Length: 151
Picture 1: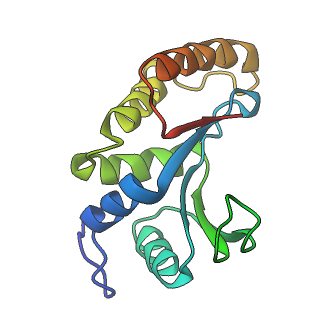
Picture 2: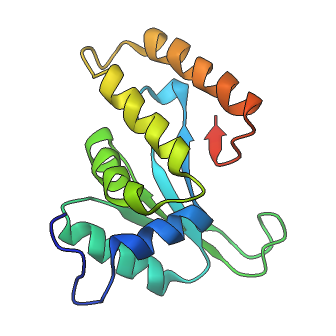
């Protein structure tokens, strides 16, 4: 994460702006702490460039075909998803974009704070994590945080 620019001229600022507009964090209590950060887009070229940038910064990501045209909210083009999974990958990604976020800054701060306050001690402690996540869900709905998707 020390270099701001790669050979493709990608920067954390650009990725943060893209995430602010097209990204989300899927907080899913049933999956424990597997909270993927996702960016959904119809153009794969920019997602591939972001994926290469993340790889160069030690962050694993996966690009997959999310929806066919017309399948989701009458989308006119196919939608692709760049997904960052695993707590360590998600944490490094969120820390990289945090200084440059505007819209989703509070959400990302909350997720990073949760990771810090409740470090993994027992990965099978789903009941405890679920109770904590349900609290986040309630807070999010009261504050109308629309960038959180809860399964």
